Image 1 (tube, one colour):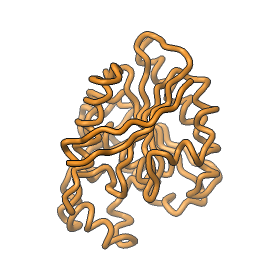
Image 2: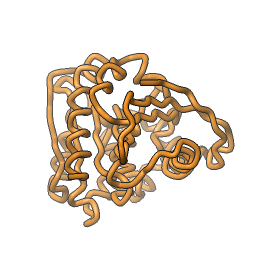
Image 3: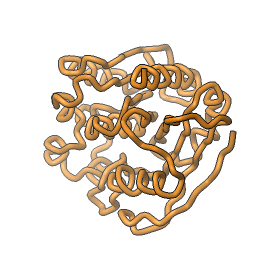
Length: 247
């Protein structure tokens, strides 16, 4: 097992950015890669510093990569930083070119917490031909329903509300795409989480279209205690999807 920090210049961002990578002890054919996304106010170090990720991950074959996207919501922001292009273009290209990772649909997965849960579902729903499965822990999935709570922040990232509602940044616009009907998605939310109702709203809407949306509620709040407790559940589910896809 090894953990490393890499820095590289992103053309989309116009600057150098860092990411963390966890490498498992054993190399296998078609090694699965998990993009693990951070929440608002966190960075590429947060999963390593605030959870027992390394101990949990030792049971699985995933290479785990953790990028830093600031407070961008994994979006080409209205204020001009192209983090969506970085995440979906520059970053994968670097991983395949310089680290020789294979990023086919069969071995590429994405998960995240809070803002990162939104980013994980957004990536998978926009690119179901590239992502094998995605997981959201306490994700801010229905941004429209929580817009009034963070109007200034959302306008800075997404622009005005009307523009957001019609865009590919709105997950509710993506679930009706026939390409995602069979996309495996895992949605976990705490029963004392401030985002519980918006998660229920997203689930109620999305289940009309998605055949493989695994929705679960567990006791807990919007905090690292909850995410650390259920990270093993998330990793086990992702490992199951990896084996199902490659059966």
